[in-house]
Image (cartoon, rainbow over all chains, first blue to last red; front, side):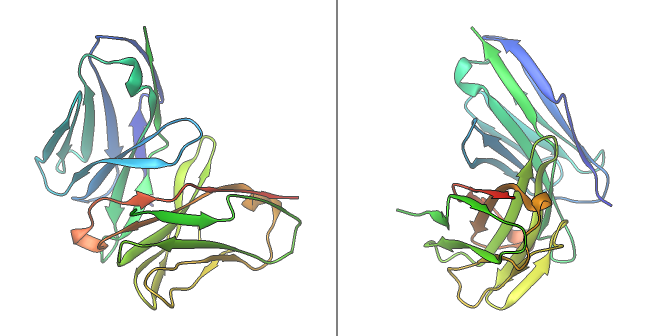
Length: 112
Length: 115
C-alpha cells in the first residue's frame, strides 16, 4: 500500500521567513503534484512534477522532485500572510499512473 | 468560463436512501475523478475515469458507484448511504490521465451528512 507522508503537519511561521515542506512516498513514481486549499474552499493546483530532478517555481513557492529518494519539497521563500493555507502533495501510481494518493496535508499559518 | 460543477453543494440524507452527486466539466477533459476529504485523513480517491466508459477504483471505492456515459459528466452514486460516508466530496478533471496528466481542476465540493 502506498504511503504518502508530509512533514510537518502544521507549520506556524513569521512573515519574511523561509521554510520547507517535505513529501515522502513509499513506492516508485515519477509524478508528483502539489495543491493548495484555503479554509472552506476547494483545491487549487500549484505544481506538476513529471520527472526526476524537476523543479518549478511560482512566486515565493518552489517545488522539486527527487524520484530516487522518493521525496518532493515545497520551499517557501520570504513567507507572506497570503500563503496561509493547507498544502497537499499527491503521488500518481498504477499501470496507467492515474490513481492518485494524497498526503494528509500541511497546514501553514503565516503570522504578521 | 472553464469550470467543474457539482450538485448538490450540501445534502443531508438518511441511511439507506439512494443518492447521486453530479459532476460536470466544460473543458473537454478526458480524465475525471472523485475524492472524499475527512479531517486528519486528507483526500482519498474514490473512483477515476480515463475516458468515456473507462472507470477504475481508487483507494476507497467501497459503497460507491460511478458511470461515465458522456465525456462531460461523471456522477457519483451512493446506493445505500451509511453514516461513515458523511464527508466532503470533490470532483476533479484534467485534460489527460496517466503519464500525461497535468493540472487537475477541482469542483467546489459537496458536503454530505448521512444520519
